[in-house]
Length: 411
Ligand code: PMP
Image (cartoon, rainbow, N blue to C red):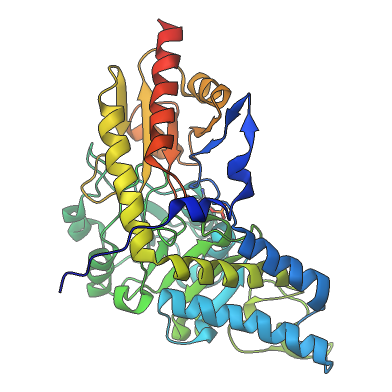
């Protein structure tokens, strides 16, 4: 059945984001940097403010009505995350500070427990540093090696190489769902199936995927799936580690302290079950509640409508940017999310970023925490525009004019 999607009411949506009315250098801001951090709608900010104003206390600690209420809100947010990614149980949802902390948690618990000298950890060529460095640290500690799934010039992973790269020594495969530089949407379900056929567990970095795609961790059969609240219209300081319950139960705790224990004596400490055993200390309660509110907000817009709107912007911007002589887009995969990295002949990406800033256009210029991707494409850096559900075609036009103006200046 073909259902026709109602387009998003972007004019109304933009009213939820006061930042979009700001003026920089005499120009209305054009925020094309959601891949760095998404903006939070008022609904999220107000939900967090209400908690701080009227509901604030610690969770899981008191018999007071106030404490029980805060615990209920906090656990309700965990349940919202569970539903959002299709996990089987809220016990599979561990709060972390973000994607980076979630990957470090897995590397230092699951990784330490399963990787030995001579073993291999397989990563893709388009990983963010967050999904490289924790594994490199583990590999150094254990005497293991990192192996890399190569990619094509278009920025698509070469999946045939998996037959050779997955060996009896592979202890984990880590892959990004959507590349923060190239925008490539990787076929993670297929990759996971191939890895599982060789008995290899898979961690998926979903930091750039959850804001754009509907994710179902059970359908993907991911062992671990991680993401950050701040890319999902939520606050900073909160993120999610999804892990299959059997893995979480087998993993040792990571940080020690309050909340994660069952009993403590001078001789021995015992731990609560997952996810509590990975959540030592007072958590970011307002941020967790805020992330729950962000998920509610996105649900009211509809992820399928968001995806359709962003796809339209991606196609329109790609087409317009491609018409600029001397401009090259990095990442031309068939399946792409709304991220466009580009370089312009004769202009350093940092200079271009500053010139665009002068026109009110906020983009990211740099290596995007993906230096191996820069090396693969033989560039020091790129300029990257990333689009969200509140962006418009008119804003793409402003970007294009600003790039053209910069090229004129550099002539
Ligand atoms: N992975 C990817 C693909 C990302 O884009 C980012 C953020 N740029 C991260 C991991 C790290 O996320 P955080 O800094 O929120 O931990």
